[in-house]
Structures are given as C-alpha cells and as structure tokens.
Length: 83
Length: 271
Image (cartoon, rainbow over all chains, first blue to last red; front, side):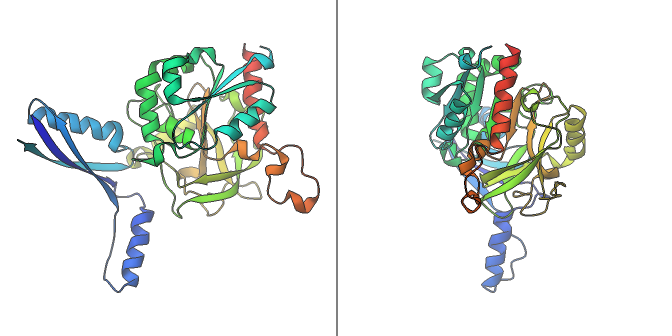
C-alpha cells in the first residue's frame, strides 16, 4: 500500500529558537500583536508499507533516525492512505 | 611509528570546504595525507589502512535536515561498522566543525555507552546566526583525551569559528546528568573562554554560539574521538592569524598547530 505522510519537526519547548524570535520581532515591527513564533520543518513523504500500522512504525523510526534529533526536536506526523 | 609513515584520511563530501586546509596542515607536520570523497571511500578504500581520520569542516549536503545529519547517516550505512572498529581499536578520529556535527549526529559523541543509535546531544542553531570570528578556547581535559596530551592544562588557544549551528545542547531533562557524566569521565576537552582566560559563561561573543556550559569540544569516554567547533587548521600558520601584518613578520605557527601536532605525536608514540 502506498501512504502519504506529512511530518512536522519543531524545536522542543524550553530551547530558545533564534529564528522564531527574530521572525517574531519582525512581525511585531510590522504592527502585529504576535506573541511568539516557533519555526519548524515540514517533510512530505510518500512510502510503501504493508498496512497503516507498519507505515506508522516506519515513519516513527525515520523521524528518530534522521528527520529529528530527539535531543532537541519534537516531531509529529499525519498519515493518509493513497489509492 | 615513524612520523612519515603515519597515514591521515580526510573524507570529504559534497559541501565540505575545509579539506584542503586540513590536508595542508597535516602535510606540514610530516605525515601522509589523503583526501578522499566519501563515495570513493566506500568503494575503494579500507579505513584500517589509516592511522588518523579527520572529518573536516564545511556544509556537507548543504546542511540539509541538520548540519552534519545526512553525512553522518551516509557514513553510518556505508562505513559504520568499519568506523566503529577503527574507533574500538583506539585509533584517533577528529571532527572539526561539520565533522564534530557528524560525530554527534552519528552517535559517536558523547558516546556515553559506546555509539548511540540516536544522538545524545545536538549542535543547534546559534542565537545570533552564522558566526565567523576568532575565539579563545581553554583546554580543560585532565588527561583522558590522549589527543590533546601535548597541550598544557588550562592553556588558552586562539582559533576561529565559522558556523551557524554550534550551540551544544543536551536533552533538557538530562542536562545535569549528562554534564556530570562529562566531568566524571573526563570528556570535556575545550570550553570557550574570555581574553583573561576565565570561562565565557555564555557571554557573547566569547561563547559565539550559546553552547551549554561553554562547550566547544568533547571526546568520547575512551578519549580517542574528539570533536570541536573551532578550526585548528585555520589557525595553523602564523600568516593565518589576524593582525600579524601590523606586527611585522608573522609568527611561524598559530595555536591550531598545537592540537594537530598533539594528535600526530600520540600516534607516533602509540604504534
């Protein structure tokens, strides 16, 4: 089965996010009441897996092994089957 | 082992850019040096033919995903086992800047219980973006790291940093524990310092990347894998130092030579 997944990787709360802080400053400068910005990455993957359970397990592993550094990153993903 | 027989391997990858300077510095020390593209390394070389491996600085694979991450995984699936054997035998591995990021991403550093599957630390983005400046680092290792044995304790070395991601971090919930382990196992090697020789204490620009505990370089528990953010190869010759033209003739060498010479001397004595 083919699956499509969107993986989000963000810096864990508690670590300063210089890119987010700088962006927030710029948005405040533009007059928006932005309180906080956190910057992350989005990966759109498509993959082949036997079933949904396997797809979830594989993506979990992919996140831990490469897309996120578990020391500092949180990750989450949405999965949908593709015909 | 005779110095002229020592073979240094400098793997390069798309985006590494300090391999030539690193090679030049080691050549000056009188050892044999080979710069080999990682793809060729997998196919045509045996790591065990070398005595020292130096992962150079740069921006391998465009720093995609995270600095050093892709290169680290490439090494893992192509030469992981060989590299582990190389390290297990006590042969020295040095990672400079991107090379340090690789060693962290590949789980070799800090490597509390040997190589970890997932990184136990991170080199995150700097608070003030990319920093290219001269910094001071203090040698704080108490003897566990044989690669820096020739550098006097508490010596303060000057060399440049040039990185956007060098903020050394441990997982928040294990920060104290991991820091304690670094001390217990004598794995701290270099910490950022101020001009007066005291630690930078997180102060910009002395600690240029906001690293936890001013960490600029660490080694594995066995001491033969060393990674650092500053560039010894860019502080090797006197003419690479800032401001020498104002002083007249440059000194022959800079502080970077101390570190590289120390590694070569370790191998010279060991074999």
